[in-house]
Length: 192
Image (cartoon, rainbow, N blue to C red):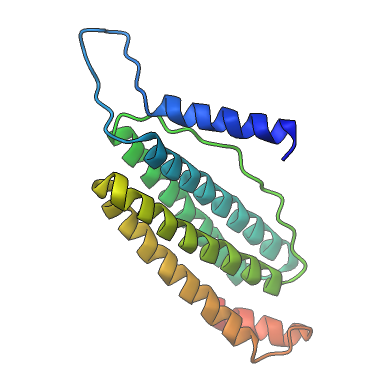
Protein backbone atom coordinates (compact mmCIF):
# COMPACT_ATOMS: atom_id res chain seq x y z
CA UNK A 1 0.00 0.00 0.00
CA UNK A 2 1.53 3.33 -1.03
CA UNK A 3 1.51 6.52 1.06
CA UNK A 4 -1.46 8.00 -0.80
CA UNK A 5 -3.53 4.85 -0.20
CA UNK A 6 -2.53 4.84 3.48
CA UNK A 7 -3.54 8.48 3.81
CA UNK A 8 -6.83 7.80 2.03
CA UNK A 9 -7.64 4.86 4.33
CA UNK A 10 -6.67 6.88 7.41
CA UNK A 11 -8.81 9.81 6.25
CA UNK A 12 -11.81 7.54 5.59
CA UNK A 13 -11.44 5.92 9.03
CA UNK A 14 -11.26 9.36 10.67
CA UNK A 15 -14.41 10.48 8.82
CA UNK A 16 -16.28 7.34 9.87
CA UNK A 17 -15.29 7.91 13.49
CA UNK A 18 -16.33 11.55 13.24
CA UNK A 19 -19.65 10.45 11.78
CA UNK A 20 -20.25 8.40 14.91
CA UNK A 21 -19.85 11.52 17.05
CA UNK A 22 -22.63 14.05 16.61
CA UNK A 23 -21.78 17.63 17.40
CA UNK A 24 -24.47 20.07 18.35
CA UNK A 25 -24.39 23.86 18.46
CA UNK A 26 -26.55 23.85 21.62
CA UNK A 27 -24.52 22.35 24.48
CA UNK A 28 -27.66 21.99 26.61
CA UNK A 29 -29.08 19.44 24.18
CA UNK A 30 -27.28 16.12 24.09
CA UNK A 31 -27.85 14.02 20.98
CA UNK A 32 -27.05 10.40 21.75
CA UNK A 33 -25.34 8.20 19.21
CA UNK A 34 -25.63 4.54 19.99
CA UNK A 35 -23.79 3.16 16.98
CA UNK A 36 -20.15 2.19 17.37
CA UNK A 37 -17.56 3.36 14.89
CA UNK A 38 -17.31 -0.23 13.59
CA UNK A 39 -21.04 -0.37 12.86
CA UNK A 40 -20.97 3.06 11.20
CA UNK A 41 -18.05 1.89 9.05
CA UNK A 42 -19.97 -1.20 7.91
CA UNK A 43 -23.01 0.89 7.03
CA UNK A 44 -20.88 3.50 5.26
CA UNK A 45 -19.03 0.84 3.27
CA UNK A 46 -22.30 -0.82 2.22
CA UNK A 47 -23.67 2.60 1.23
CA UNK A 48 -20.71 3.04 -1.14
CA UNK A 49 -21.29 -0.47 -2.50
CA UNK A 50 -24.95 0.31 -3.22
CA UNK A 51 -23.95 3.46 -5.11
CA UNK A 52 -21.31 1.49 -7.04
CA UNK A 53 -24.00 -1.03 -8.04
CA UNK A 54 -26.33 1.82 -9.03
CA UNK A 55 -23.70 3.29 -11.36
CA UNK A 56 -22.82 -0.14 -12.76
CA UNK A 57 -26.44 -0.81 -13.69
CA UNK A 58 -26.81 2.69 -15.11
CA UNK A 59 -23.78 2.05 -17.32
CA UNK A 60 -25.16 -1.37 -18.34
CA UNK A 61 -28.52 0.19 -19.21
CA UNK A 62 -26.84 2.88 -21.29
CA UNK A 63 -24.70 0.33 -23.13
CA UNK A 64 -27.69 -1.92 -23.85
CA UNK A 65 -29.76 1.01 -25.14
CA UNK A 66 -26.86 2.18 -27.28
CA UNK A 67 -26.56 -1.16 -29.09
CA UNK A 68 -30.28 -1.81 -29.42
CA UNK A 69 -31.06 -4.16 -26.54
CA UNK A 70 -33.98 -2.04 -25.37
CA UNK A 71 -35.56 -4.64 -23.09
CA UNK A 72 -32.26 -5.31 -21.33
CA UNK A 73 -31.72 -1.55 -21.07
CA UNK A 74 -35.06 -1.18 -19.29
CA UNK A 75 -34.25 -4.12 -17.00
CA UNK A 76 -30.88 -2.65 -15.99
CA UNK A 77 -32.46 0.77 -15.54
CA UNK A 78 -34.82 -0.85 -13.02
CA UNK A 79 -31.86 -2.49 -11.27
CA UNK A 80 -30.13 0.91 -11.04
CA UNK A 81 -33.25 2.43 -9.46
CA UNK A 82 -33.45 -0.44 -6.95
CA UNK A 83 -29.82 0.05 -5.91
CA UNK A 84 -30.47 3.75 -5.39
CA UNK A 85 -33.38 2.86 -3.09
CA UNK A 86 -31.10 0.54 -1.14
CA UNK A 87 -28.62 3.42 -0.70
CA UNK A 88 -31.41 5.70 0.48
CA UNK A 89 -32.48 3.07 3.01
CA UNK A 90 -29.00 2.92 4.53
CA UNK A 91 -28.82 6.70 4.70
CA UNK A 92 -32.22 6.90 6.38
CA UNK A 93 -31.12 4.30 8.92
CA UNK A 94 -27.93 6.21 9.73
CA UNK A 95 -29.78 9.51 10.09
CA UNK A 96 -32.28 7.78 12.37
CA UNK A 97 -29.38 6.97 14.67
CA UNK A 98 -28.11 10.59 14.54
CA UNK A 99 -25.23 9.80 12.21
CA UNK A 100 -24.62 12.01 9.19
CA UNK A 101 -23.99 9.60 6.29
CA UNK A 102 -20.63 9.83 4.57
CA UNK A 103 -20.90 9.06 0.87
CA UNK A 104 -17.54 7.85 -0.39
CA UNK A 105 -16.59 8.18 -4.06
CA UNK A 106 -17.14 5.09 -6.20
CA UNK A 107 -15.68 3.75 -9.43
CA UNK A 108 -18.08 4.21 -12.34
CA UNK A 109 -15.98 3.06 -15.28
CA UNK A 110 -17.64 -0.21 -16.30
CA UNK A 111 -17.04 -1.23 -19.93
CA UNK A 112 -19.11 -3.72 -21.90
CA UNK A 113 -18.67 -5.61 -25.15
CA UNK A 114 -21.73 -7.85 -24.86
CA UNK A 115 -24.85 -8.57 -22.89
CA UNK A 116 -22.85 -11.43 -21.37
CA UNK A 117 -20.43 -8.83 -19.94
CA UNK A 118 -23.36 -6.97 -18.36
CA UNK A 119 -24.75 -10.10 -16.74
CA UNK A 120 -21.37 -11.46 -15.61
CA UNK A 121 -20.52 -8.13 -14.02
CA UNK A 122 -23.93 -7.93 -12.36
CA UNK A 123 -23.50 -11.42 -10.90
CA UNK A 124 -20.07 -10.49 -9.53
CA UNK A 125 -21.42 -7.29 -7.95
CA UNK A 126 -24.42 -9.03 -6.40
CA UNK A 127 -22.39 -11.95 -5.07
CA UNK A 128 -19.79 -9.59 -3.63
CA UNK A 129 -22.55 -7.58 -1.93
CA UNK A 130 -24.07 -10.83 -0.64
CA UNK A 131 -20.79 -11.71 1.04
CA UNK A 132 -20.27 -8.19 2.37
CA UNK A 133 -23.75 -8.00 3.90
CA UNK A 134 -23.14 -11.36 5.56
CA UNK A 135 -19.83 -10.11 6.99
CA UNK A 136 -21.40 -6.82 8.10
CA UNK A 137 -24.19 -8.75 9.77
CA UNK A 138 -21.69 -10.77 11.80
CA UNK A 139 -20.10 -7.57 13.06
CA UNK A 140 -23.49 -6.00 13.79
CA UNK A 141 -24.73 -9.10 15.62
CA UNK A 142 -22.10 -8.62 18.31
CA UNK A 143 -22.05 -4.82 18.28
CA UNK A 144 -25.64 -3.66 17.66
CA UNK A 145 -28.53 -6.09 17.29
CA UNK A 146 -30.86 -3.51 15.73
CA UNK A 147 -28.37 -3.05 12.88
CA UNK A 148 -28.17 -6.82 12.50
CA UNK A 149 -31.96 -6.79 12.11
CA UNK A 150 -31.68 -3.94 9.59
CA UNK A 151 -29.20 -5.97 7.53
CA UNK A 152 -31.65 -8.90 7.31
CA UNK A 153 -33.63 -7.21 4.53
CA UNK A 154 -30.46 -6.49 2.59
CA UNK A 155 -29.23 -10.09 2.97
CA UNK A 156 -32.57 -11.30 1.62
CA UNK A 157 -32.38 -8.90 -1.33
CA UNK A 158 -28.84 -10.03 -2.12
CA UNK A 159 -29.80 -13.70 -1.98
CA UNK A 160 -32.60 -13.03 -4.48
CA UNK A 161 -30.30 -10.99 -6.75
CA UNK A 162 -27.59 -13.65 -6.79
CA UNK A 163 -30.20 -16.26 -7.77
CA UNK A 164 -31.67 -14.01 -10.48
CA UNK A 165 -28.34 -13.38 -12.19
CA UNK A 166 -27.28 -16.99 -11.71
CA UNK A 167 -30.44 -18.02 -13.59
CA UNK A 168 -29.57 -15.62 -16.41
CA UNK A 169 -26.05 -17.03 -16.62
CA UNK A 170 -27.47 -20.56 -16.69
CA UNK A 171 -29.82 -19.56 -19.51
CA UNK A 172 -26.89 -18.14 -21.47
CA UNK A 173 -25.37 -21.64 -21.38
CA UNK A 174 -28.20 -22.69 -23.72
CA UNK A 175 -27.26 -20.36 -26.56
CA UNK A 176 -24.32 -19.49 -28.75
CA UNK A 177 -23.35 -16.11 -27.28
CA UNK A 178 -21.45 -15.26 -30.48
CA UNK A 179 -24.62 -15.61 -32.57
CA UNK A 180 -26.41 -12.25 -32.60
CA UNK A 181 -29.78 -13.80 -33.39
CA UNK A 182 -29.47 -16.17 -30.41
CA UNK A 183 -28.54 -13.26 -28.15
CA UNK A 184 -31.44 -11.16 -29.46
CA UNK A 185 -33.84 -14.03 -28.81
CA UNK A 186 -32.35 -14.47 -25.32
CA UNK A 187 -32.82 -10.75 -24.62
CA UNK A 188 -36.41 -10.84 -25.84
CA UNK A 189 -37.28 -13.93 -23.81
CA UNK A 190 -35.51 -13.16 -20.52
CA UNK A 191 -35.86 -9.39 -20.41
CA UNK A 192 -39.26 -9.14 -22.13
